Image (cartoon, rainbow, N blue to C red):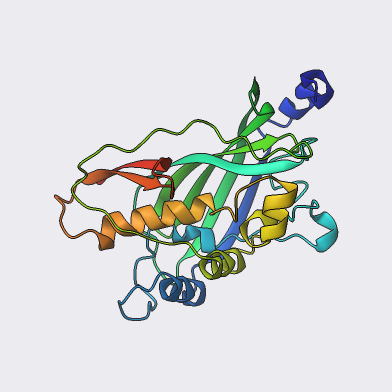
Length: 262
């Protein structure tokens, strides 16, 4: 697809688009994810801190079936306008935590489309949308997030998904944990976040239509697992943070994270 056919100027005219949403951090979704992650602590109740990255359980998308694309993702996703490219994927995020949110808190999220850019490469034309969010709790600003989503061309018949080159993680890491994100965990996370993107639970769609070798693990799920490992899962630590890597079955980096705790 030619870049000019994307009407880039029209897409960029949406930069600055804003939305405000409110929600209540009720315990039900958090306790269900606690079970999905097999965490052993007691049930979360009012006043308990919400684990970092579990905010994905709240401010859920609200789209009727006729508002979805064939792949199950929304056509017009909040501040991100409808895209002419058919494939959508999580492309990374940065999050800064200022103070904890707690079960029972009333929260407000302010979201803004910060940027739309176009790149071309071996996988064809790519459109990146950057969304900035700020979430406020009873005591003020709780976290700031910048998330990137990439929109891609459809896979040509007979071709597999062309993944970018991935590096190997550093050798000799002091601690590691093996997690197998099986279809049950992917389905549970999709259900808890009301994420109907078919690449996460419809294996035939993921492999035959989008050319992936199997189901795709959610980016926010990987983020939550990395933070879960850093804060409650690893055996030792100095309490100041860490560098973390999620590694594919082939031994290459799928996602990395650098965490600093003030």
